[in-house]
Each structure stands twice: as structure tokens, then as C-alpha cells.
Image 1: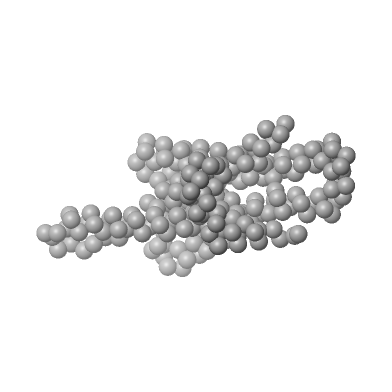
Image 2: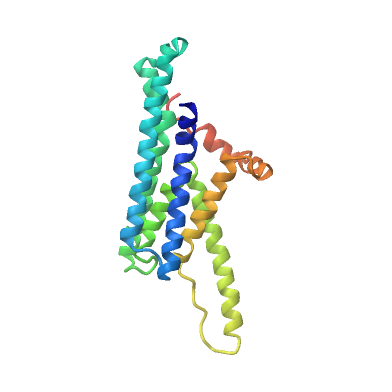
Length: 224
């Protein structure tokens, strides 16, 4: 039972996130274009379902474990148990959904206001998906990864175009941001994997000892 609980608690979200990204890449490679909004929404709903299932499962499993142990039954007082469950199992889910929905609405609003000049139709949904598969507070890694991927891809695009247009008078074209979201998801998921495991201990310590990251984790709970 404890093994199953650990798998659900630690690895349910990362496993489905990895399968989601693998599915996006396969579809992208097969069709040679970014997956449709309908497909992306399907992945969004799948990951939301897994997040909510994880929260429900962990809440019930925690109650059952404490119920079996006499010394922990005092912790089953409704006020304490609800506070503990909310902090540990529900807060990350609700915060992730809130920020995902907020970013989605903001991008749709800005795109509508400026006549769809900045984003393709799929991008708000890809950004929403990127936040969902990087639950709070890990979603900050997705934001940082997106910025890093944008800078790297724009630099590569600039170098390639300068080389190709060296003897022409054409203007440089800006690479659409549509290209960065899936690579950013992979990068952020890799960072999450490094934090969850000891596969790269030096990089893990560099990340978790960063003052900003420590502040996020230490001040994560709403109720104490």
C-alpha cells in the first residue's frame, strides 16, 4: 500500500506529463504541424483529471493510514485533517488550475485586442497545458524555460537567416513563438525530474538551494 501511495503521490503527475509530451511530439512529427486545439485540450483534460484524482486518492489514503494507527488518530480531528489535506494535496492543484486559467484568459484577451498579431490559435492552449503539467510551484520552471527557449531559438534563427540572407536584401523574419512551448515543456519537466530524483545531485542542489526556489517551497502552505 505504501509503495502504491508513493507512486501516486510522487510520480502520477510526472508520468502523465511525460506521456503527454511524447504524444505531442509524435503527433507533431507525424503531421508536420502543431497539434490541433482539440488534441491539446484532450491532453489538458487528461492532466487535470490525473491531478484531481491524485488529490482525492492521497486524501483518502492519508485518512485510512492514520485511522489504522492509534497514535495518529488524534490527527483525524476535522479541523486539522482538512487543513493538512488542503496544504499537502489540494493547494498545488488549485493554484495550478488558477494560474493556468489566468494565463489562458490573459493571452486570449491580448490576442483578441491586437487582432491575433502575437499568438497562433493553439498557443493559449499550449501555455495552459505547459502550466498544468508543471504543478505549482514548479510552474515557475515552465515560465523560465519558455524564456530560455525563446532566446535560444531566436538566436539560432537570427544566425541562420543572416547566413542565408547574406547576399540578399530580404528583411530578417522573426521566429514565431509557437515553436518554443513544447521544448519549454520538456526542459521544465527535466528540471522537475532532477529535483525529484538524485540522478544529477549537483544540479539538484544548485536548484533547490537557490534563494528564490527555497522561498517558494518554504512559504508554499497557506494554512499552518
